[in-house]
Image (cartoon, rainbow over the protein chains, first blue to last red):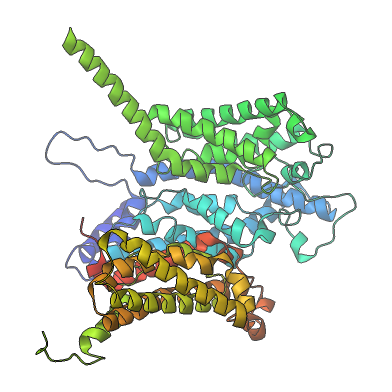
Length: 388
Length: 217
């Protein structure tokens, strides 16, 4: 480590203003703070600098995503070998899936970070770490068979239109990873829905064994089939077809625990999304007019991207609600809308993505009303006090 | 007044009336008028071109007519007079399209009739034709129609090329054999949100080239 420190210090002068590579200052700083905790201290006034900066916040989220990623890799292999009927061991399945996921992750990071670097140089800003998490989130919410050029296009769209036009990291209205998914969902629906894209090899015409179906539980339900869906336990563990990282509610909950313990993700949002989803599920049960509505409410939590959205997308501190009361409202409405879109709108088998994007849009409004109501409350108190 | 030298028809000032709406004072990207139809008719090039021509003709001729009678229009009822002129022009254009270009007319459907409500028309009549002579007003109408049409055609070009893989109905991408390499048409380009984003990108490009257009904070 000492060697690295010395090396960085020795080339540092070149990258200061007026130095040989002065223009690439932000690139240098980006790499320096990636290796070492920034040694910036305040010299004036009584400020305390917390050593947990944006980069370290993002790293914690990535660690929290790892269980979902590892399970996702295993599940990609599992589904593939199930569909082809071949025998394979646990590690072989994981390795197969890992090799399939790796290109997606590489493409997403190269394209996204490339645009971030260029934008930072043009604007003379520091390089933001905002994409570290988005770059991993994007592959995790994709079907495994998505063509790489589509992924690259969606990532570019998400970073440029979803983030940079608003001013970069911390200024975006919508969650960039969900923008990427929404872009693909509306642009190339054939690659984002159906019963082939979720399993490696099916879109390339691979043979499948008799009786195997690559349809997700949500697709089955949207088609009105409630008898063939997997058991709750299977969906909770995650051995079902689906987007790479979203199938295992268990792995996602491990990530949620990491986020909550470290204080990075808001437990209020996570809890209220689940509460909203459950209440909407119970409400639908009460009015059950078709088999889909009769489905036990807790099934909804384990299906599709609900848990993933609740833990990793809704808790995005930039696009979510900021006020404490607002977080409850914001999360609850995400849960309610997700299940409502899922069950009531036949055009969209899954509603989590749209629900979160919609509530991203409403988050500032929720915050506004929460702040106004507390201002009004205090004004009232002040008036009463002045009268006495 | 009578001693003043007669201005030539295509003086620099008059030409400027035509060129500024194409760039610096574009009705869509700078004044942000007429957005509704820009989103609706830009899925394909053909309707966009027809729409651009229709709006140009209606704007120019209404500008001319209103400017010619600007002194005899009572101020209180000027809006309704302007509307009568616009409506007459629009009906003429609509009937003309139905007679000679029925297919396009069907594609444009209600949007030809809705030219009446196009903000650019009323905007130009109020802002220019009511205070200027007929000939400059006519040029101003042509310029604004062209500025509107220019953006429409650019947006429609990209939406048709990326969304349907054709240019003016000609399957360019299929002829080039791009589909065999795994390329697919982008379904989102055909949806209205992409028209809005395209217009936004054009505004972005224009403002980064001409920084004086950026509002002061």
